[in-house]
Every structure is written in structure tokens, then in C-alpha cells.
Image 1 (cartoon, rainbow, N blue to C red):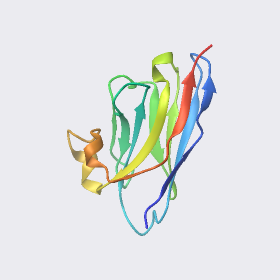
Image 2: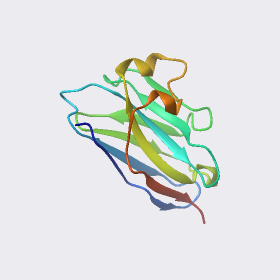
Image 3: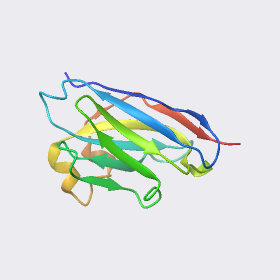
Length: 126
């Protein structure tokens, strides 16, 4: 059964960096697009980035382009977050969807994903 577990969140100063990890069970047996989403208090969950099952295709929200990098290896999907700003604060979730999702214009819409991790808190503050 597919399971996702996020880690790596924490408190960081503006301009700093964090790397989030999403451990994906059965990664070599089942193939998924993996997305990162975030949710600030009082706001809707929004798509941040996603990566195809092969790792060849990535997507980024405009708000994080040039600052965040998504990658994956056999067991884990990463989100390297650089040049962090306070607006990046929120609970970050990873999620799995069908492999075709990464190629869609709607790849960062949460409705495309069926399995979610528990979230990890990211706080960007002085």
C-alpha cells in the first residue's frame, strides 16, 4: 500500500534554505507523479511543484520558480527550497497521483492526487 512521509521542515531565516523529503513506499513497484503542496493558515492548499515518475518532467508554481528544485531518487522525492521568504511559510505536504499527471496543465491542482502525507511545518521568519 502506498504511503508518503514528509520530513525536513523547520524554522529558517529569510534567505535561507531547507530541503524537504518525501519517503514513498513501494517506489520501485508502483509509479506515481509526486507533488508538493503547501497550506498557510486560513488559505487553501496550493500546488508548489511536482515531478514525473521518471524524474524527467517537473513543474513549479510561478511563486517558487527559480528558488525551489524538485528531484527524486529510488525511494524519496525532495524539495530543495532556496532564498526562502516569509510567504513560503506553511505546512508542506507531498502527494501521489497517476504518472500521467506530470504532463498535464493541471499538474499542480490538488484534485489530481489521491494519496497524501501528513505534512511538515515550514516557518520562514527572523
